[in-house]
Structure formats: C-alpha cells, structure tokens
Image (cartoon, rainbow over all chains, first blue to last red; front, top):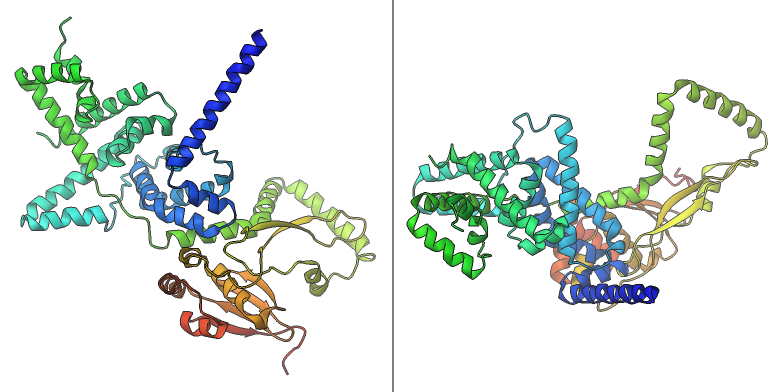
Length: 219
Length: 267
C-alpha cells in the first residue's frame, strides 16, 4: 500500500518535471538554437554566444571589477556552456542556467583573487567606451554642463567601488536585480534560493550600499 | 500593533520594486505622508538603486567570439598535451623518480630499438586518418581515437585527434548565419571542401587555416584575423560563399604558400 503511494508520488513528480520542461521549451526562445547546436550545427552555438556575450561579459566585469578578468571568466563561462550544453535538461530557461554558470564562475574567481589579496589593491578599472556610457555622456553634453558630466563620472566610480566593498552575496543580488533588471523569481531560480530569501537579501544589499554611499554622496 | 519607522523601512525595497501587496502599500504610503525622516530614507534608497541601474557596462570585445572559437579548437587539438603537462609537473617535483624513469627508458629503448618497426614520418602519417573537410550542418567535431605505432612488446598509446565530419559543398538552401560565423580554420576548410580539384587531397586543420597535400604539392592556406572578419561580413551580406577557391582567394585575400614537398623535392 505504502509502496504504491510512493510510486504514485514519484510518477506525479516525473509528470510535473516533464511538464516544466515542456513549458520551458515552449517559452524559451533559445531552445531552437540549442537543438540546432546539439544536432551538430556549430553556427547555432556562435549565435547563442553573440546573443549573450555582452550580458555575460558585463556581469563578470561588474562582479570582478576588472576588464581582463571579465574577459577571461566570460570565455570560461562559454567554454563550460559549449561542453555542458548536451547535459542541459531544459527544465529552466537557457538564460537562467547561463546566469547561474556565470555567477558560479565569478564566485570561484573572486575566491581565487581574494586569496591573492587582489581586492586590497586599488585594482578597479574603468570601462573604456560603452554604449550606456556614450549615452550618458551625450546627455551630459546636451545639458551643456561640463561639471555635471565630471560629477556623474565620479559618482559612477564611487558607486562601483562601493559595490566591490559589498559582501559577495550582496554584490551578486544587487547586480542581478538593479543592473540586469531580473525579477525576484528569476534571481531565486538562478541562485537556487527561496524567493523570500532573495527579497530580504536584495533589501539588505541595497541598504548596505546606501549607507556606504551616504556619507560621501548624499551629504 | 503599531509599527515603527524601522519596520516600515524594511518594506522600502519591495515598495520601490512595486512588489508590495496593496494593503501594506497603502499603510506605508500613509506613514510616509506624515514621516519626513522615512521620506528622506526612501529618497536615498531610490537614489542608490538608480545609481546602480545607470552604471555603464562595457560591451564584450569585438574579437570575443573569435578568441572563444580558437580556445574551443585548441582544447580539442591539444588535450593530450595538458595530460602530459600534468605528468611532467609531477615528475619535476620528484627528481629521483624522473631519473629512474629516464634510466629505464634509456635501457628499454636500447633493447627494444633492435626489434622496433621502421618508425619514420611516412609510416606514422599513413596510419592517421586525413581530416576531412568541415561542414557547418554536419555533426561538428568528432573525437577520434587513433593508436599510435608502438615498438613491439609495448602497449600502444591512444592519441586523441580531431577529425572533421564531412566533405563537400554546403547544401543548397543553407541559411545565411550558418556560414557567417566560423573560425578561420573552419572557413578555409569549408572553402577547400568546395573545390572539386581538391577532392583527392588531404586537408589538415592548422591555426588560421589548413595544409593541403595533393599528389604533387603541399600548400599552406591561411587567412589573417582582420581578413577573416571581413570575410564574415561579406558572407553575411551575400549569404553564400564564393563559388570557386580561386575566387575566394581573391575576395578574402587568402594567403597561399607552397611548402617543400618531401616526396617530390624541388630541384
């Protein structure tokens, strides 16, 4: 009797997993490219890289604070994806999985760099020219106020420094939420946490960053 | 129970993200109306969020994909090297073990050398499958295990090598993007595979291109990164590859060098 219940339960779980996979497949725009890659088409993988390289590279840069490190880690992320796509079961969206791989690679790299005292030195680099940077510069130019532009640049440097001062877990959630613009639910899936945990962690991270910035920015 | 300012402030993040349930939202807004210090706190938190949201994010370098494809190729080509690296690092750490192995190898080689088969370049290369031309729609990289020749009485050591999966012209109706993005090596091999004159030739992938061995000639064909990028743009625009190799040579500025042929030395 009991065994039957177990069987039933596992059966239901399997059905639910299958449904979840079907749902993810039908709603995941990357699924077609993945299928094409898995059937041997290298070009489809290239397309996936092109679709996501800026997001992965940008997140790596914001998490690690260095352009060189960002490039190295972003390359490793896509190498991992290349090797592991065959194991990707499609139970979540590809982008969720990609963000998870990226965050894990960055965390490993942060540990490695932390052991070498990397973050004690003032090793933050400023990105060269960027799309967003260009836009904000244009806006500053339009405002015809050179001081404003300088100030904005300075603020950005300060914000980035203070983000690097946050605890690793706080840095991750605040960037996923406010820079990547992901939903609480999506972040919970990426980090494999409960949504409630994500909510409170995001609030703590923002509050911590706010108090770090408060003294210098919002006098 | 009456809430204090600090209790309300716990909800600020959810409030800014519009994730607060309607009842709580109303209560919070009512509190904000009459509490200037909470208003100030909310303003600062909002400014913090905005500061992160507007941080400039760099774009991936232009050659990101090219570098990645090269690493994928390199990992496939040089996997055995990393295995040897591991062993040699271990041996360097233990000099006595290294010395023992060297002595053993020396004695072994001396004894076995008398019975070993004729191991020259040609016999070994004849054992290896020629790499066939790469085709975008086929199954991509294949691992192939090739047993290298070993002296009699010794175990042969398997070597992993990459073979390319298919030979020939790309199928008609192949979509644009399938040819728009390949590594320099893949591009050259695809071009070579299209050429009917090279049907019988052996094609070996190398960095930036390929070596072609025909009955009487050995050619090294390569393309620079800059020209490769141009080639990608051209194929993306036209949607097809040049119809012949000589045309491709002109359009893509391929470098073709004749190498000395060991089987047919030039006078």
